[in-house]
Amino acid sequence: KQGVNKAIEGARRDKVIKGGLGAEVTLFVDADKQALLEQLGDELRFVTITSAATLKPLTDAPAELEEGAAGLKVLVTASENTKCVRCWHHQPDVGSHAGHEELCGRCVSNVDGDGEVRHYA
Image (cartoon, rainbow, N blue to C red; front, side, top):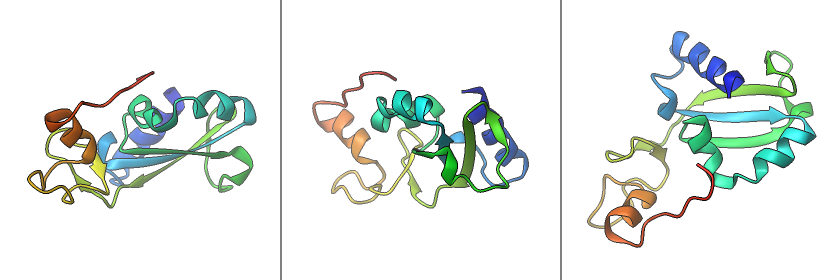
C-alpha cells in the first residue's frame, strides 16, 4: 500500500492527477505478490483507492519506473472515464444507465438494485 500511495502522491505533485479516484494504476509485481493480489479481483481498486487497478508481471514494467517497494513498481495514469457523481469513481459505464445518467453501474445497483457484494475491501 505504501508503494502505491507514494506513486499516487508523486502523480498528484506532478499534476498528472488531482486525486486518487481520478487515477488508474498498473501494479507491476513479482509472482508472490501477483498470486496474493489476484485474489482481490476488481476489489483491488478499493484497496488502492483508485478508479481502476491492473496487475502485470514485474518483468513487464517500464525501465524508468522506480521500485516503490520490494517486488512492486506502480504506473499511475489519469482516468479518461467520466466521474460518477455518487461514488466519485471514474468508470466507463457512467452515462449509460437510463434514469441514472450520472451514475456508474455499481451505484445504480446500490441505489435501485440488490447492491454490490464485496468480499475483501
